[in-house]
Image (cartoon, rainbow, N blue to C red; front, top):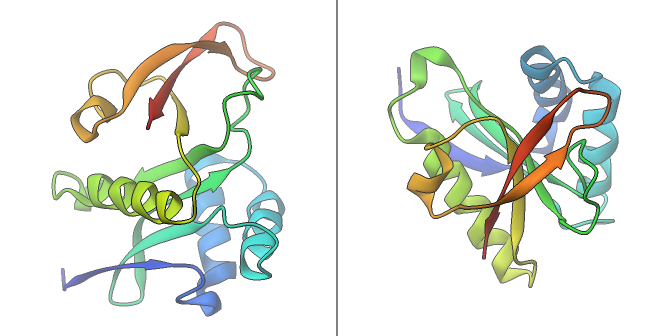
Length: 150
């Protein structure tokens, strides 16, 4: 494992296709859905960014910001989505650094607060996120936890 580098997709636009494929492989959301969001970001139509952690040229962590992460609370926007760190790289603070980068970058652009839908408990609190409410997930039984970072 080499030195880890944290970049936005605007820093490294040539990674778009590979990043969309990587996220698709982690979450099963169609690659085209990721590409549509990434294209909007790269064309400057939105400031909702995509951030990656790279080990050399290999993507080992990442997340994005989108309007809504498949829940029934459109008033809670934008949402951090697709948070993932490769298993071999977990426990090294990658997700925390990615979360801090996204929060800082969005705040600099006047975008705050941010929301996050997850089934995890105890993880996001470590990084300053607060549980806000439950929301219904699109197409699924039950609810998901919504967190906020102001």
